Image (cartoon, rainbow, N blue to C red):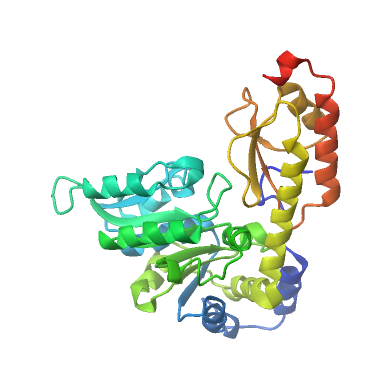
Length: 353
């Protein structure tokens, strides 16, 4: 009954079984094991393209390290103002790049607006020593608003970024959820649309702790290996990260997990859509929902034992609900039942907040 995040879950059975099976015998450290060596071929097959893959343990490390390869200390990283790299990574991108500047480009529902980005790049002061230099564009897919960029939107933003000499990074902490929402292939949502490097997340969708930085042109990885080591993210027992990835990607486990999480979010949105006083903040498209509910309904849900974030603070009635691979239909049904029962006793004034 915890809808705070998809980080509240454990690992899916396939990942746990892989870890237990690997927990026998010995293997070379720091990625010198067979399990890690096999990832290049596995990812190349998934993405239909030669890649360079580097496992790391956290999404923040994946994002910050990926961006550091492309972005000098005097560089500018363009992202949405609500992007995780801008709001929730405690300055990690700035630290790992040696001081680069993050510039927020607004857009509705967590997606960067193409015209706003064009205006920012046109007036960026390219070549002017007094200004940070445009270097990278970071897109979050799925977004922090629970929405997704269409393939056309990714392609247009990437094309514009490349025209100005920027590299394109995708924060894919919820990559699988966006992928199944669009019904496309991993290749179509990344390098075919112009993405240069992907922070590919598995932790939120069934892994214990497994993220990966994927370069779609291996030569672009540059000195990434040294940056990963220097930052403290070269895991000595790397095989335990790599084994999670192998189990996660095998037989479509990752897609099945994401489809279930998205389906539970859809079921939840359908159950709450007819609730008196409910106001959607963003259109539900993946596994995150942002909705305003009357205060008595929220209090009833909290009394029933449900957990969720009041997104704007405890004195606001906008909440975020996140579903996961392990969310049960019973919990979703009960959530909607409690919400509807609480709404039946509300006065018209309460319903309109």
